[in-house]
View 1 (cartoon, rainbow, N blue to C red):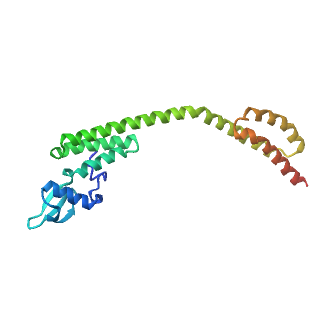
View 2 (view 1 turned 135 degrees about the vertical axis):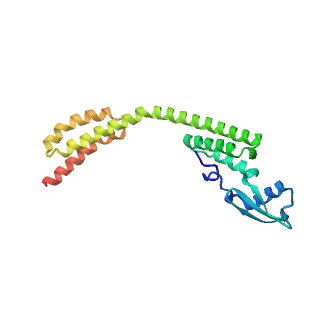
View 3 (view 1 turned 90 degrees about the vertical axis):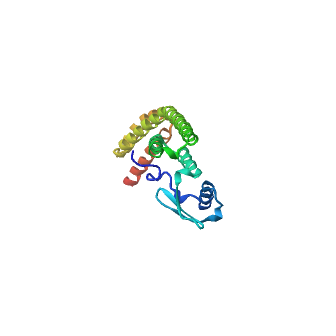
Length: 203
């Protein structure tokens, strides 16, 4: 992992509300917002032109919006691989820019990451339990579909009324074994459909 939060697109300062950035920069510089003539978003910092003074650069990481956007990224992580990747990027941030992060910000990010990690863990456990609960039903449905498809093939190759009449008792008997699923309820419809096809073919 070699990308920081900006390079990875996790935090995109240019998408921040300009009015909010304006106020936070003014607060950081201890000046009135009206004394800022212009702001420009550069790759890793903000260019600030102050009235009657030279321009200065402000790191995005010094603004409260940086902390909030990082928290949002953690809370919006949709899966474990992304959360782990984000955790690596956060660790890299702290190593690359140690002076930009105070203990309160680091604790907020760590706490949010731990909470999201636990949430994803519980969601994965619930999903696994649901999969296990539904597995017998899916296996039953799969077996029923295979049985149903098998009878479709058998009936398709039956070309006489006598043959259909000989098959009917066995199909009815087996249908009762799958009566709890749609295939068992509709299997005899295949038989009647084939009967109609042979009737039309011999008319």
